[in-house]
Length: 400
Image (cartoon, rainbow, N blue to C red; front, side, top):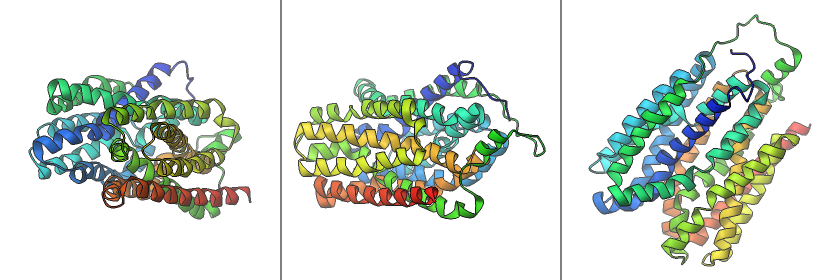
């Protein structure tokens, strides 16, 4: 494994990796929210089919994550992330040529492979292997910037699609993967796994092994998986439909899009606060704060769905909470289980999380259709409250 790297020395690389996250999440995960109207108009693909593509992406990631995590621990992330950029480019180019539901859904398997190899947990493993004890802070700083993905790519996707058509828009996104993302991934240093007999100091060993003893890891793992999977069901499902949800609640399209764009700055501010002050608190307490705000924001929106000021408050609070939880989802496994085998641990966690996340887009599309915006928000609050209870139980275990 490489020695402890200094942040200033690797600042340009970390900034580049943050940029690749903005590009990856924006062009792959957030773009269907804007492209859905074009796909319905040109191909007759309704929202259920469009967002099933994201479901396929996440299921593909769940299938690959355990073996990919072991590979990252042994070989590092450089090769996987480079190959992932190429596969993502191929997938986006194929997506630009689809002619119907079968080719559309099949293309998402390809995109899902590229997504798993270069995004998802792979970037966090890269930071852990590069930054040592500074991993939590650096992950927080990188996620601080990548929280802007939706605010950058929603209007960018809309502008490119309106000017050149949605097919050319996707081809541009594919080219960006090859011209910008791939060269940045090629700059990641090669990884050398630390020999088994190499000595480490006591502080390093503690950081490598984590806070939870082996006898308590199984229960801790499942409480963490339950909490993050439940909160992720909402955070991965609701944002994809938030523009349509506000429109159905009575807001105009322009107003809904303008309010939804506030999600990026809200996430940015929350992650900035976490990056500056979060290290003073255990990660589980930071997660508890976000998990408490999430259900309150949904209840607020459900009680007054058609009021623009309430919608603004909902977007700000909800995305601030989700921003904090997203950082905790990346850093709590590191704090509890250590850097040793971090890739494998994230790979195991990705299975229940990704399967839950995979159901989210379609589930929320059906809920909005069947029970309306207010009912969807009430159920979202209940799901997030269950996630809060699981995290409370985990925090109690850690105290004892």
